Structures are given as C-alpha cells and as structure tokens.
Length: 434
Image 1 (cartoon, rainbow, N blue to C red):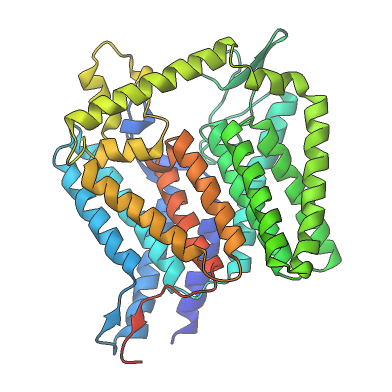
Image 2: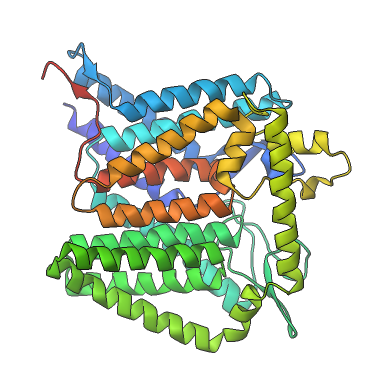
C-alpha cells in the first residue's frame, strides 16, 4: 500500500475538518435568498479532492477482492438517494435541485471516507475543535464588543444589530447582537459549538494529555462554552444540558470510576461558569425566555405559520415531494403574496425532508437516522454517541439548516461518520474472501 497516498488522504482530511465550519464560497448564480443560490464552496472542493484520493486508495486496497459484504446503512443510503433523485424531476427550480443533489452526493462520499479510512480520531477531533474555536473567539468578541466585521475569504458577513432581520436580544436599553461567529445564524453557531464541546469531553476522558496540553484544552473549552452561551441559542442550551445529564447518569450506571473522575471537573467547571453567566447577564436570559416579548411572539407566530405551510406542501406533493432544495420556491409559487425573505423553510428538518422528497424519501431518511443511532450505541463509548444523537435530534426538531444549507448537509454526514468511529464496532466494507 502506498503510504504516501495514505498520508496525503490523512492531511487532506485534517485540513478539511479544520476548515469545515468556514463558509468560503464563490457564487455562481446569485439569488435574493441563499436557498436558491448556486455556489462553489471551498469545503466541498476539498471533499471532492479527498474523495478522489480515497477511491484510488480504496481501489488499490481491494482490487483483488471480488465480493463484499455491504453494511445495511449503505443500502439504506441507496434507497434515500433514489427518491432524492426522483424528486429532482418534479422540482420547479431544476438547477437548484441538481446543485443540492451534487452536494448530497459529496456529503455521502465524505461519510464513506470517514467509515472506510483508518482515521486518527484523536487528531480529527482536535482539528475540528480548533476550527470551531476560531469561530468561538470571533463570536465572543462580537457579543462583548457589540461590533462585527465581514470577510468574504472566511465566509463571514456583517451583522448590524440596528438592522431588522439581524438576530438580537431586545432590552429596554436597546438591541444587542447575538454571537454569530462566522456562520449564518447564532443557532447554527450554538449547534456547531455544542458538538465541539462534546468532542472536548470525549478527548479528555478517553485519551491522555500532559499538563500543558490539558491547560490549553480547558482554555479552548472555556471559549467554546462562552460562545455557546452568548449565541443565546435555546436549542443549543437544551442540547448541552441534556447531553451532560446523559453522560453523568450513564457514567454512574457504567460504574467506571476512572472516566467518572475525569468527567466531574468538566461538569463542575461548566455548572459554575454557567451560574456566573446567568447572574451577570440575567436580563438578557430573561428576555430570551420571555414568550410575551415582541421578538418571541413574532418567532412563535412565524414557526406556527411555517408548519401550516409545510403541511400544505406535503399534502400537495405527498409521494415524491416538491423537489430537493425547492421548498423555498414552491412556497413562493403557492403563496404569491409572500415576500422572498418571508418564505423561510419550516424550522423542522423532518418536515422539510418530507416536504422536499416525499413520503418514500422521508421513510428512508428516518430509517437511516434511526439505524445509525442504534449502531452507534454499540461499544463502550455509547454515552458519547447518545449525547451526539440527542443534540442532532434537538437541532433537527427545532431548525432546518442541517438539510436546507450546503454547510448543514455536509456537517450532518460528518457528525454521523464521526459517531460510528467513536463506536468500537467497525462499519467498513468487509471482503468476504479475506
């Protein structure tokens, strides 16, 4: 086996993981809303290059193998792919659907690489954490300085709290910018940081680090946690709270004193830090949970309206959907009075999937998710994967970006691939004659 090729794949994968949260892109066809935009994303270009290298490696490694035992989840993906492909032909905006289909194929390719290449999980997670840490550092500065900047090379846009549409906390003193990092929305930042925080916990309870490495990791954890809090993402806060409870009670049941003793400092550190944050910024938090405030009433009404629109689209396109990536355009076509910025995807990934690829595609999507969830619970690290999937489920129930945005689709398959690597079982193609 060509070790140079293996090293090149390893370096390319590490580089991709570090840059994964960045939204650097070249817009090919612009649109009023980015749901109808066609663009070349840097992280997808890296995935294309990585996939090319890997399939050369995979062919060389298995060229003398005639028969494979194919794991079940690949067969489920094939079924999902079939109905996604069919949905393209009913789409009112063919170019966008074809573009999203290519992104889906690239995301599946990344998933395949993560499961079939002998990755260094510790290194991959460290690169992922460092990439998110840069976003968190920007996010903390955005909130405490209440200033922002744009940089097209990093994929960041300018967010002005005085402009309508910017995510803010409204107080009597004025409008205060929530943390975005370099991502499209504070809720996306909160979700990405959540996965980085769980990755930090996993690394420190499963691997050994020297004193200064631990100090550095704890500092990174502090910035990550602070950015999670200043995103004021309720779904991310909920996911983080539930995940820590899952880990805590799982370790009690597991009766592994060594791992439990490593986790307790994280739990104590997090609780203390959160209490201090709540004490200092209690007015911000009260406003975020005040359902009678203007912004919260508006948000609730919008989400109820989105669910009703989604039900109408599902009813009109039950079997094959409205077309992959075509929800926005379908909604505008069915409701001409809606303004472009009002035609938001329904804030529920499962409803959005059902709307776009129909009943059969939805069944395969849920089957794929549940099957991987079951498989990820095998092995001694089940409590970490239970936390990851709990977070995924929360974000999918309360938001749409994991399916609607190019970054979200790639990120979803990255997390699914990592979860199976965290599991102690192997999910690679198995040669029958070996």
